[in-house]
Length: 202
Image (cartoon, rainbow, N blue to C red; front, top):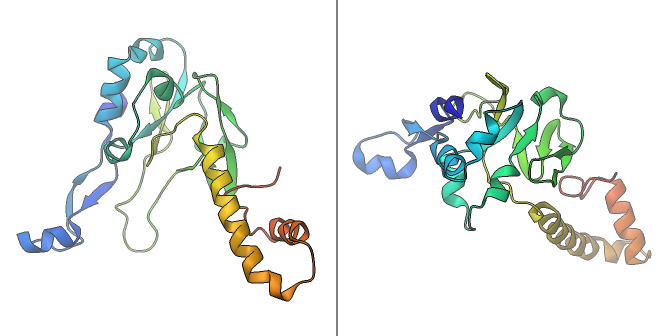
């Protein structure tokens, strides 16, 4: 994990809090790096595993670690590791992790997602600070930086809640304009890609 430990993450801007200290909101305060994930991997003894064989590691930033409210376990850490070298451009399906569970693949608005994490986050427009490194070469694998901690089983439950919420909104918006039963309205909604962002059809 020495490569991840020395990897430069996306820029952190001062924002509104910096104005009182004489900074512009767009001034760079520092970088959101990956030391906390590396420390957790080392503490769990997973670094020894990663020294043998080739792996692709999806590494959350320090800010993502701070946002995570659960208990970090070895199983969660293993859920970020996929055997073999998997370049970002070759991801086209679910990926089985060292945890034994699989990261769920989906493609939406020309972006690649695994569970709820976008792979290859990059800034649009003039700002180039929010770029998350991908396809970082290591001696025995690849690193893709992500902005969240991945938790086994969380994706399906989050998706279900979002789908149900969107279903309710969709039916409320369209029930007055259609004589169809709700199941027909929902089927139409799926085919209109109303829910595709969270629950793509197989």
